[in-house]
Structures are given as C-alpha cells and as structure tokens.
Image: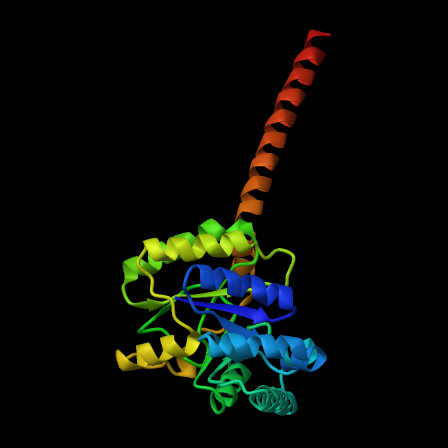
Length: 278
C-alpha cells in the first residue's frame, strides 16, 4: 500500500501528514508542484528533511495548470507543452536536492485513446512509474506502470468504500493499493487517514513509498501492461467516479427523497379521502 499526498500546499498541511506517518511508522510519497516550492522555499526545505528520513518526493508537474493538464481535446502542440512543464519541474526539484523516480499526473485523467497513450509514453521517458487519480487497485495482470491507479480519499463520504476496496483487493491476492490524499484541502480528514492506515495494518498491508513498491513488484516479476491494453476513460467512468466519491451523500439523499415521497402519498390519499366524504 502506498499513500501519496498531492500538492504540498503549505507547511501545516505536509506537517500533518508527516506527523500521522511517523506516529504509525509508515513512509509517505509527497506529490510536489514545483512552482509551489519557488513561491515558498520553506516548503522545499521541510520536504528535504522528509526525504532524509525516508519519505519520497514525487513530481506533480511545474504548474498543475488546467490549460495544460486538464483538457478533453489534445494536440501535438499541447503534448510539447506538457513535456516542457514536466521537464521544468524535474529541473527545479532536482536542483533542490530531491531524488525523483515517480510522477503524479495533475488531474489524473486523460480522454481519447490516441493522446492518452502518447501522454503516458511521454511521461515514461522521464519516470518509470506515474500515478493517475482513478479508483480501483492494481493487480499483476492489469497494471500499467505508466498509469497506476489511485483511490481518492477526499472526504469522510467514501471512507467505508475505501475499506470495501481494500477487502476486495486482499481477496484478489497480490496487489498494489494506492491512496490519494490532498492534505491542503478543506475536506482532508487526518483522522480518516489514520483510520485507513490502522485498518490496512489489521488487513496485513505492507506500507511502501511509490519507488519501494515499484521495485518490489519488479522483483516479483510484475510486467507492465502496454498502453494499448488500457481501457479508455468514458463518461460512464466519470459518472461512476462522481458517485463513488459521494456515495453516502447520494444514499442519504435517496432516503430523504423516499421519505418525502411517502409523506406526499399519505397526504394526497388523506386529501382524496376527505374530498370523497364531502
């Protein structure tokens, strides 16, 4: 199991994740936006101490710009801009002393099989492993190391869903289970992260950084699936991800709707009965 915390948006945010990781004796991978380090060198200095203690720093691009990394239509020119952004981040992060071997895709979803494959191939020229932002877990026969799936943990709504996926993964045997957090976001819950770590321990998960896990799976003979074998991202997948993230909100809303419908039926029947009496 690998925990990747994206953005490194403030000292307070990354310190919170580091405190939780240290208290549970696990190592975390921090996906870093390089421009953020230019804006606040204190974050770079703090992350360097994290790296020295065994945590991993991954590139999360230079800009995290939606105009570059979050598009439904792509072109060769945009692919060039993506690589320029990635290379710029790589230069800044390495200049700050970080050892890089993994990449976290900004926004994590690509549309259109042709350019999705080109983007993944481009990133793999620079990094042996890269992570998206989709659900599911990675099994030895369905994993592309250029596009490793992560389960987003953005609110308490889907905590039980993550546990369900963890149990499912364990039943499937060898797997790489990756969790996505955003410690700088308002809906990040430190207690949820702790609960997932504790639950993982009870289920026998071993916690590794991204690079440690990659090296482990390569030693055990995992073969990276080719880009051509990846299923394209569809509107159905988009809808499923949205439902997954807000599962319990939808469940609550459904029960409220049922309750209101029942009350409405009772009131209508009562009114019709009174009208018949008159």
